[in-house]
Amino acid sequence: MAVHEKTALANEDVRDHNLGLVLTALDHDGPAARAELAAATGMARSALSNLSAVLLENRLVRVSAAQAERGVGRPLERLELDGSDIVLAGVYLQLDAIVTLAVDLGGRVRYESRVDALTPTGDPQPVVAQLCEAIERCRGALAAEKVAVRSLDLIIAGFVMRGSDAVRYALDFGWTDVPLKRLVAERIAPFPDGIHLAGDTQYAAFAEYSALKATDAAADLESIVYIRSATGIGGAVIADGEIFGGSKGTVFVPGHTIVDPRGKQCECGRRGCLVTVADPELLVDRAGLGDLRRASGLPAALTEMVTRAAAGAQPAGAVLDDAVMWIRMIVDTAIMLAGPQMVVLGGYLADVCDRVREMPEATLDTIGVGGLTGPQAIVPARLGDVAPLLGALTLRRRRLLAAPGRGGLIG
Image (cartoon, rainbow, N blue to C red; front, side, top):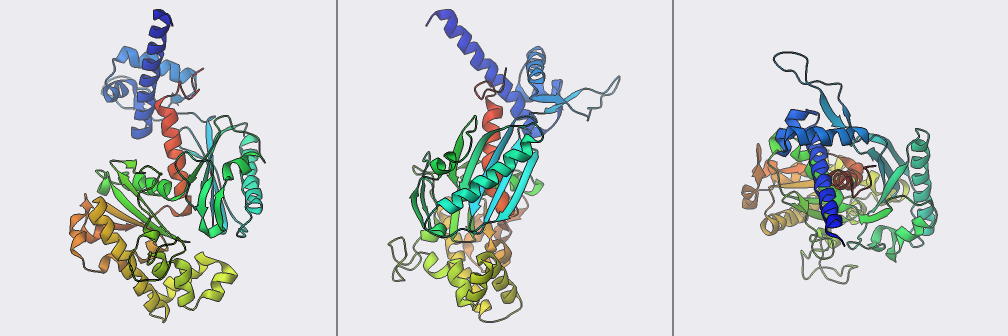
C-alpha cells in the first residue's frame, strides 16, 4: 500500500474517532452547544465545527429546539442526536411471551409490542414461526413510517455461548443446541447489519445497571450483581460498567450454583444446585398453585404465591420464606466473590426484595454506593421483561455512535 493511502486511512480513522466522541457526548449528556461539545471532547472549536457540519449533513445530529442561554445576544444553538431514520430492533423470547422493541439511533422508542406465545417444548419450529411473525409486524409498522430496520437482536431466555449462532440450552423450551439464528434467518428477509443472537440475563443486568446509574443516588455506580428468577434462576455481573462475561459469555449462573452438596440430583448432572430447592416452578407447586401454573402460566402463579405469602396464607408463606433463605445464601456468596456495590433482584424476586435484605448478615455492610448502603443496596429491578432488549439495543447503539464511519452511517 502506498504511503499516501496509509495516511488517508489513518486520517479517516481519526475523523471517525472524533465523530464518535461528539455523538457519544451527546448521547451521554444530552443536547449541547458546540462550545460545550468542544470542552467535553477536548477538541478545538474549529475542528468541532467541521465535525458537526458532517453530522448535520448525514442527519446524525440536528439542531435542538432547546437553546442554551448566554448573558448577551441570542441564545446559543444546541445540537442533539438525530438518527431517526436509523432503527435497530430486538425480539425477546421468554416462556409464554414474545416482546419486541425498536429504537432509533437517538434511543427513542419507535415500536414496542408484547404478545402471549404458545411455546411447546421440544420442536423449535412453532416457536420460530411466532418469532418471525413478531419480527415482521415490527418491520411492517416501521415500513409504514418509511423506515427500514438495520439489525435484529434475537434474545432468548436461555444460554448462548459468546459469538455462537445456536442456543446451547433453553430448559424452558426443552432445547439443546438449537440453531435459532439460522432457523429465523431462513424465514425472513435479511437485515443489512445482520441478526445477533444472545441470552437474556446479561443484557437485562446491563439495562438495570444503566437505569440505576442514571439516578442521583447511584451516579458513581460501577458494579452490580444481578439475580433474576422468573422461569429459572439466572444472574450476571457488571464490573467497571461492563458486562463481565468470562471465556464463555457468563461467569455467574446462580441457579446451578451448589448450595447443598448432599441435596437432590439436578438436571444439569450435579447435586444440590440452587434450582433443586428454589426453582420457581417447584415453589409454586409446593405452595399448592400447580393447577394455576398449568392453567394460567408460571408468572401468574408466582404473583399469586407472593400475594398469598404477603397476606400470611399458608403454605405459600412458608414456601416463600424457605426460598428467600436460599436466595439470600446466593446473594451473600456473590457479594463475597464479586464485591459489587449493589445487588439487583429481578423477576418475582423484585417483589420480595424486602424479605431478602431483612435477613441480618454482616456481608451487607460491605456493599453500597451513594445514598444506598448496606441492606438498602439490595434493590428490586425496575424495567420488567423489556430489560434484555433495552440492554442489547443500548449497547448496539453505542457501538454505532462510537464509530459512525465504520458503521456505515457517514455518506
